[in-house]
Image (cartoon, rainbow over all chains, first blue to last red; front, side, top):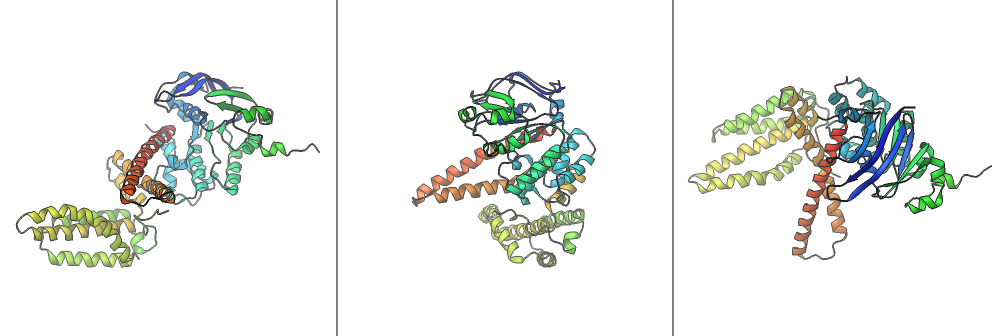
Length: 239
Length: 203
């Protein structure tokens, strides 16, 4: 197995001096689907941003993506889906937004067309992002990320704010994508269904790391970190 | 949520809307340039232009009262600039000239914006080699104007929902707070947008 993401003793302080991440280390192998859970303000989003080396201050510790530490290569390999689709959709039309990544990377625009089709957005090309529903915006964001053909997907609360149908569609779409995935979310049923491994982050520290079922059903661990056992695991009966 | 106060009618399907964006933009800019350059007393030209604009608006099925309301929003800026000319001798002539010229130019631009989708205008600007940074800035402005309006509207609503003290001074103070908040939120959003651009390879 090759390691897709290696994080070694990563610590980070916000510009105002607050400690966001404290001595975090883990490795994610290629093809794994990992859930990153924890209470609000635990540092989950900050951790994801580090995979793209976006934060202005140099962190302590090392982040390697497929063994590389060079920013341009990391950004190419890791597709980051932001929490608020309005932050991510900055172009005037859907097509331009999806084609933005390939253009910047100097790739042909073909992947953009493919990504649009993959996300079920054929016919949306000329629409403006501000005329889309939240679920549609999410899918455009994902298409924009997929168009860069990343090897790792880092998704920041991909199902928040979606209605059940939007959530179902988004999950189906995600299921078909073959990439290493690191997903932060509060949707624990989603984690139980989707992820084989879970990382628990609390107050900037890695509190647990292990197989999803084991961690999600550990009631005391979950409660200690502002979480709970997902319903799907609570109501499973052995018959 | 109001997402279309700028160009509500730009996505219709009429012959005017189907005409090439290049032609419409050239035409619009030429008309504005001509209007600015015209002598103050070129009455026939002004009348002809006004009727032409009304004709185009009707052909493009843009309601005239919509254009009127748009104009009312812009007119204070024109008047603000124009008022200064009243201080010079014979100033009212210049003032009238400025008002007529800028009103006609504004209507021209409003008609252009409502017959051509903004993305098309940007495409033409890019084609005629306007500096990429300027086009990008325009594109971002258009995109986030609506997000900003939405945000302001939400904050305003939240404020109204918890306003129990109706004294005037207090409401001015609140308005100042809302504006300040809006500014802070916008700069934070700008940072997040920049991150999102970096994440997809922006150089």
